[in-house]
Image (cartoon, rainbow, N blue to C red; front, side, top):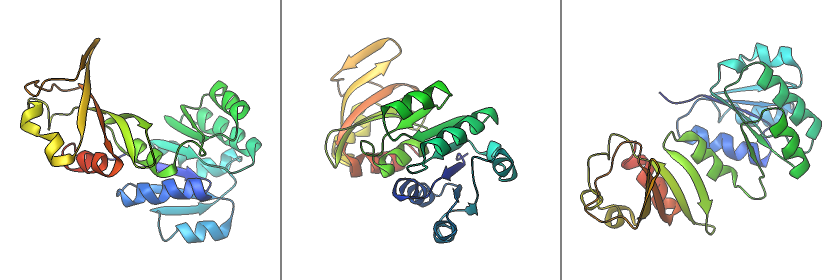
Length: 219
């Protein structure tokens, strides 16, 4: 069952996340104080609403606590970002990701309970959205504009197969550089290594190939 998301703040960063999640077929509620932006995203997101998210009543009226994950992508208004995050936490939203303007902002956000803090100048909205949308992806490390190292949790679809059986290098152009299995770390695993459920695969390759592998082999 796919997770549901709400994106608060529809600037360049929040808009990028909103578009990408929607492209993945995920339910998204887009929220902003700016009516023009909301009108734009009403044609993109599942739902769109104008609202001041520093008002607890507004968030309650939008049913925000029913969403699995809320992304706070408010622009330069640090106070609104902090107040919104605080209210979301108090309402019991299970996962809250917040855009930080600087290191001080990040410290405050972490103290009030933000689950994940991102810096858009260091993390592209599209990359973050793909990460959030997947139940299998644990972490991304960007190597260049189009290549990354990613940690992916093996699911039942690929568990029980050897690396040779899956032929990931030939089919997807990816290399498994390590496998984390509990406390054990298998570096440069052999082709005959059989994957197990919950193995963490450390994979390197192009972002396009990683995305293709996630959609075809892990879905």
